[in-house]
Amino acid sequence: MDSDRIEGPLKEGAGKVKEEWGDLTNDRSTEAEGQAEQVEGDLQNEWGEAKDNVRDAVDGDR
Image 1 (cartoon, rainbow, N blue to C red):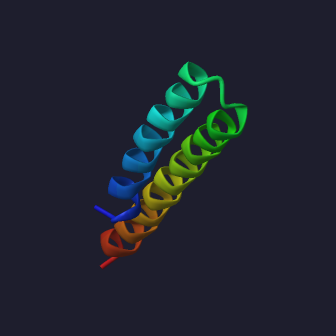
Image 2 (image 1 turned 120 degrees about the vertical axis):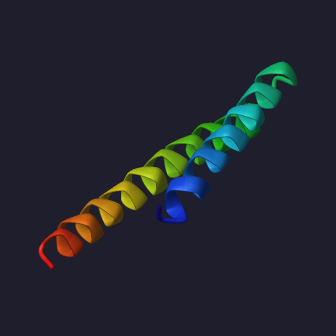
């Protein structure tokens, strides 16, 4: 498993916490940062999944 598939969901979770904190404190900047971190984490997870799929495809040919 690619490390991006581990780090991505962790980043998503941290972003969700940051977004909720921004919502609770009425800090729109923190809320937006949290949302951006969630998107970044999701993309990182997808990137790791794509790398795993390529690795599996290459290893399957051998």
